[in-house]
Image 1 (cartoon, rainbow, N blue to C red):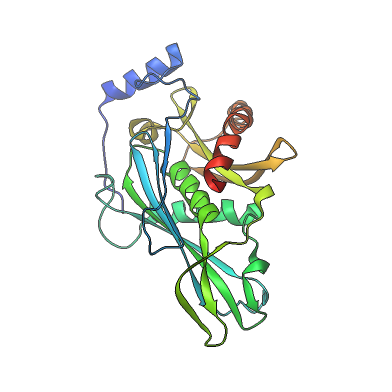
Image 2: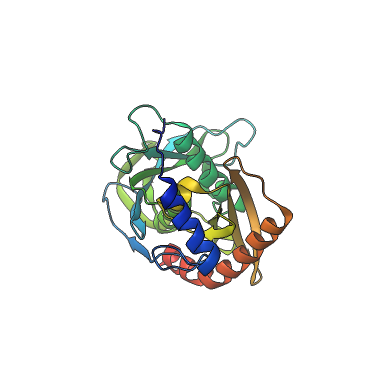
Length: 275
């Protein structure tokens, strides 16, 4: 569950007024500007991969591990995939202790959908014996600090962790997983890589990469997963959040921003994922 938090009206007015009049945030960024992205690899030696990703003060850990599993009856030659997210009180006073709340469930589902619908993971490449044994891929996300836009930070951490993961060593003779990891990466379709961008409406302005205060007072958010289509952006998934209505003009603004930011960021994102 998320704790209730009330922001003073004066602070809300200050944030919205500066955005509406100057087109800038209180931290000096333009409305469409992202914070610095920092990626740290090798966070855990016990995972197929583990990374720490930061956008400003927002920080998440993401680990990937694989296990042997029985395939689903309707996809006997395909591996399986599962994403989980933990939003702990250490990340924000807005999060409570207990079983995953709706925010954690939504975070995991949005990230899972973006990866799954893009076709990034080659599920057939995870098959060991059709109808009997496949690899199951787990992506585990833990929020370390929430200063807004966990969706984009966690989503980027997930695809970076997948891109850098190494396959376990399968001992076919003994039908078990040996210690250590091979030099082989998870089977991925690199040409369909996509990443998520989340846009909020704060006051009368569409804003990218919100901080926590902007996120709390936004009217709606829209997360768009965008991949490459011969040098042009390709939308692979979309998820709306919060109660506000998206107008036609707002949607046009968001789509133009998504296209612009994708062209600006895709090369660097690709470098992070496959470095």
